[in-house]
Amino acid sequence: MKILPYFLTAIVGTVSFTALASQELNSTEAASHQEIGRISVSGLEGSPDDVVHALARKAAEQNAPYFRVIEVANPGKSSDWIGNADLYR
Image (tube, rainbow, N blue to C red; front, side, top):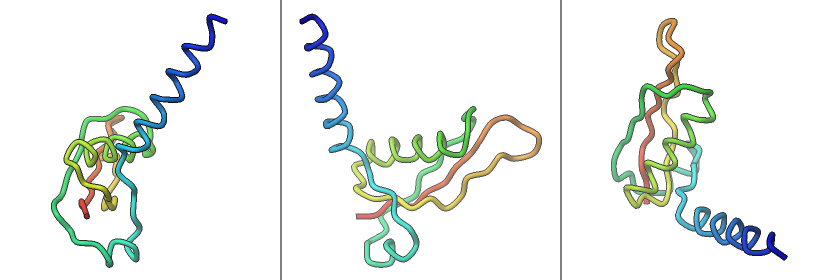
């Protein structure tokens, strides 16, 4: 079966990414955590979901287990999106 190695690689990759990913909090959940910083992304094409995914990746890169999205916007008539989030532990 030539498909089995690809299938196992996909499963391991998904589990690894999930273990390293930061979790999004809402404002109520964030109140019980310590804020440790702020991140932002800009110039992203796509959708608001793409901005949230980019913020999650950036939070994970900064070793923040949690983040709370503060802003997702499409300024002006641009097709680019921006986003800001607070980091928590």
